[in-house]
Image (cartoon, rainbow, N blue to C red):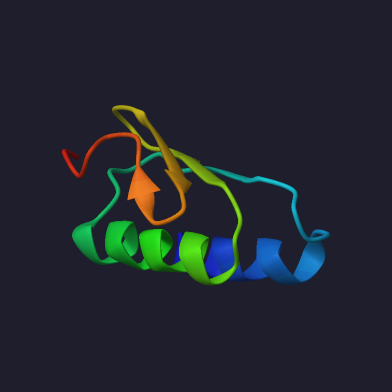
Length: 67
């Protein structure tokens, strides 16, 4: 997920949400990193994993860190 987020950050204009589809579960490291990236870059990041959608905005995930 981190590589996909990095590519999306350099290839999309500022302010657009980033949507990533993943066929596996989100690991703890990627979950934490995505929260920090959403704060630093001031972007909304949506990741769909095998079980649910994760909406990261302002360092908070919609799953309330239950993944």
